[in-house]
Image (cartoon, rainbow, N blue to C red; front, side):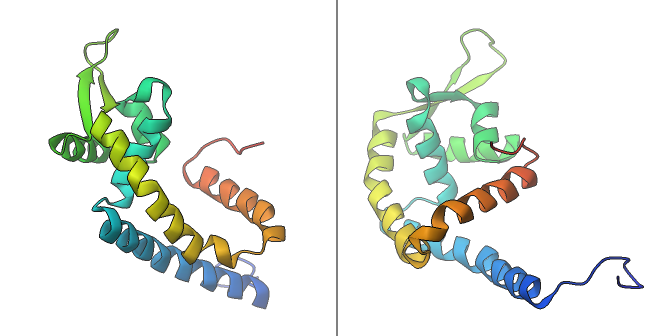
Length: 159
């Protein structure tokens, strides 16, 4: 235990892991963002919105559900959806049962854009991450990262 913090210091393996994770957290999002933006003109956040809507029932979600699905604040999702709306990739509608609520709806152009961006995004993900993870470690690493992500956003752990 550290007399200053009262916490157990990291051992060498933990320290190496923590530093490597820190590098990944700082470098990888920028690289993936650059790859996607150069190839498609979309940001990672915009792509996440289009993909989430493409996979949603009826290709529509309440704004609050969309924000929660990709871990954005209400104000941030509003700005992103407004920007996508100005480019005719998404449209906003009033919720049928609750006029106070807004629904984001994927347009035909938005679906087409998401589908054309998907192979570019997948190629970047493979080149930058997936091809570097040995297949025998993929499932375990995925579970651990999911637990970390769930805890970070306050969700219940996945089974």
